[in-house]
Image (cartoon, rainbow, N blue to C red; front, side, top):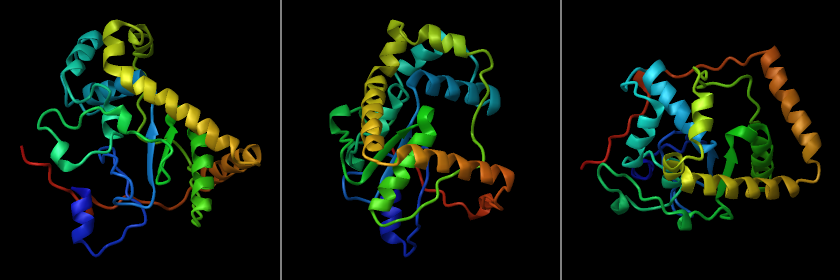
Length: 231
């Protein structure tokens, strides 16, 4: 849907961000695609807390039961699904994209994947990659947004991380997470002054804390809402 919109529109945004956009095939849509993965069980726990406690859009059930429900949904191995580049014809109603880890090429020139748990290092590596592409971006941030507190689920996440059900809904994502961590180490190892860059990045973040930028989200009336694919 996003690709169709951009093809039909005269606008050329500098960047597009979304929780839901899936990874396009090589060369499509954008010069560089960026994804940030989260440790799979922590991501599931965070989404569970948000929908049941913050948004209150889902019925609160025991966490083990929640994992069982995920097994037959598109949310099992969710990150692998979203990073498996496919075409619209491959989208299946009520099941979404297939999880195709063999399609995920982390060495693509037009792809960068970082990690939530190593966010600062990921941003330093991404800034370096953008510099090599002739683009200068300051990716420093003043604080973390869209975070939820644990509400006592951290122990539950740890307890279910290695259970058969926990592994069934995260196994592909865990494998992908490890691949991404290895690739991130390669990115960082290729930056000669990486420690200095990391220190400077954190200083820039602190400067934004000390003097917050005047940044506002557009009113919802100005948001672009793309339609969902028809069944």
